[in-house]
Image (cartoon, rainbow, N blue to C red; front, side, top):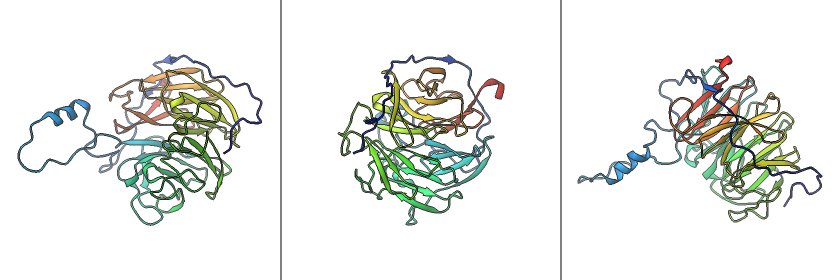
Length: 354
């Protein structure tokens, strides 16, 4: 097991940073996206809210077969990706699994529906994904314990990490993976975080390189030290391929160099971070993360984790979130945020950009 930071002498601080920041500047673009007729994020019927579910459960049943149950958890938009041309890739828990829009919200393409064996991809609960610098698209099918690489046209699967339907903690298996980035040299870094509490690096051909974590893997293998994790959930790269790992249950971010050597960490006991996004073109040392408990997005300094701005709030009105679970940032600084329960994607810009 590779342990991060063993030979690195770096000042490491776990600080309790404030929750706030400058508020009220980022606004939602009401015209984004322009969804083509017949396409949906998640399911056509959407989610029943809590009150509707309670009413349905308490209503008297008439004679005859029970009506089909409606989804109550998990269906919606699970993650976002972005390519070098600022096209936004929506990783969808519906059909199709991938829907792509340009920066102005125009529909570009869709796909990613079949695996290497020609079987449907949607059955394993799409969780997240990314786009590499060659335009290939990587999709995490969480409950299938696998990650599939698609060609830029989204119609041809090229590679698979993990063994379909088999969980494990070795060089060939994953256990409920949940996040992925691809470096400029093609190395792949995965948060294998719901089942294994580890971060794994593969080379561009899918060969195991190294991993970070406390022990051999498994749900009980949680740690709180440097290079240890408790539900590593997603991750992001800056322009130097520095790796920012969202260590969710530890309420912090751990930062590693491109060889996964530890650099620094920061967090707050009140955080419940669900995703992190950094511009592919550089953004003057800032990133964004989705905070679930308050349904907010925070802008933060990548150097020390200090918060610079906050927007959002709980709800389904414009500018609000219902389980904000996916984020990306384009080259102009616009932020795109996906709701799982809200079954939508919103674009946020500074007022001067709107």
